[in-house]
Length: 632
Image 1 (spheres, rainbow, N blue to C red):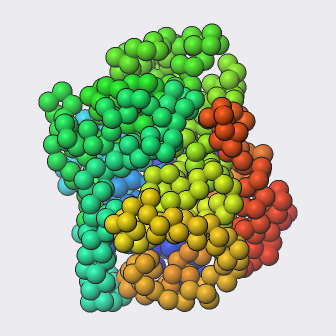
Image 2: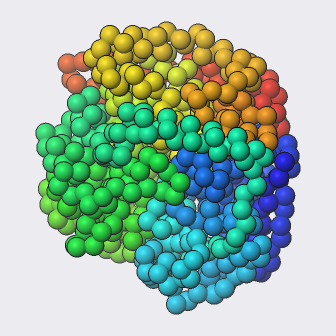
Image 3: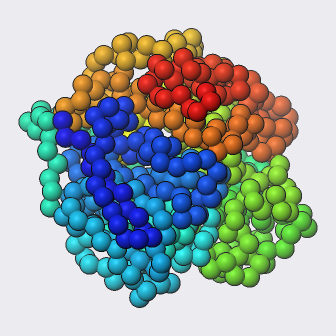
């Protein structure tokens, strides 16, 4: 077994040293966000300002990076969340992670603050820090153009330099978007990290791995979701589905349907704007949209950007959304948090509670607003602090659409209550992915499940949260998990007896799912193509990985993140959503069109093995091999 090698880099004095991850930590956490959470917990003390020199930024890969496994180019950034004060993880499909691994390191642990604007250069097992004043103020595209071509690059734009709380970091055209990764880099005077090397990943069973990979790629290409829908429309294809089921956020989440949705749908994007589709490295799904903005071909918008810069701002100008998406990437800002904060500020202004220089009903003004936020100038510059902080200053907490301080993704949870539970319990805040993405079963997928009932949702949320955590830890794209839904159901359609029956069976499996985590490694000591990830990990690393152990890695990760949040002062009271979503029915004639968190949270805690206050029990932590926190 080849153990991961990390480098600890002190930006203040320019020193660095290698460190090897122990066999025990590797087997328990693999890499990515799971190992990042463990290291962040161990290397920091409670109460640090996330933008202080003492704060730690971990940039790491998973064991599957650079192996050629399907959709395995993802790398991760872990740090203290700038918006929530809890844990942060931000995932990216750009080329940097693969080049970092080729350069001889599986991860970097960055601390301190460089005395001037600098970049970290990683090359063939060596690291140096160079001043780069010439890069100051450059956008993410120009910055990468100024750096050596063959290197993998991780950079920030003006928003990160200016301390925008939801600034992101970019690698190629992909971004580590959420939680303020760019702000953390900017606070450390770190404009870029670049890496180059020629090291190849050594596989425990290369022949077996190649055979398994061919079988897996074939499965992904044949599956209706990963082989047809995602290549055809990308995640943008969810706009029409979300509108039909009432989960397309409109006018700052006041409604779940937008009468002009077709004008910003994935179908319209594909038919009228798409130049081609593309992909991250090693990905057979090829869901990336390519569009033209002012004559230049660039990466197109994902569903989240379409939904939040479109219907949620009552904006039906698709060309403008494409422009805003590109502008955000250049300036280095998370489109979800930015668009969500703009929607909140517009409602504050409409209600006479604040004036941010916005022009509701005039979307053509949005490019100027986006720039003002990035440069923190003028009245709109105040939006750089995010929705939660804005509501604490101006009021409007009931319609500040966030969880724990992180703006919600583009699924209106009053018509998808399991997704609402996921938002509330997600460790990094209002995230659909860290939340388990139950919308895929309730509202935008092929399964016909009762989207309003709270029954069965806590157990399903735990199941999918753990599975997605494990995939991220290994370095896989989470879209690969969509192939877990049997492809034959897509042939029947959501209205079919088969899909309706599947939904009922999944909801009725609550008692089984509620108990399965106690015995997961022993209940599923197998590998199969339903979850190909576990066997792929085993063939590369030599670890005795099974489906049961794979999901247990995810559960362990989720609990470590929870412990970090508790240490930083977050409690069960923070497992919450704004009053608009829990007290005001989306449909006035249907009282059940709210998110019944009060009914779901106690069950969720029991399924997780947490006490009634949402604290992991000593028994559960011991079972997972997680050290008890001090005083625990």
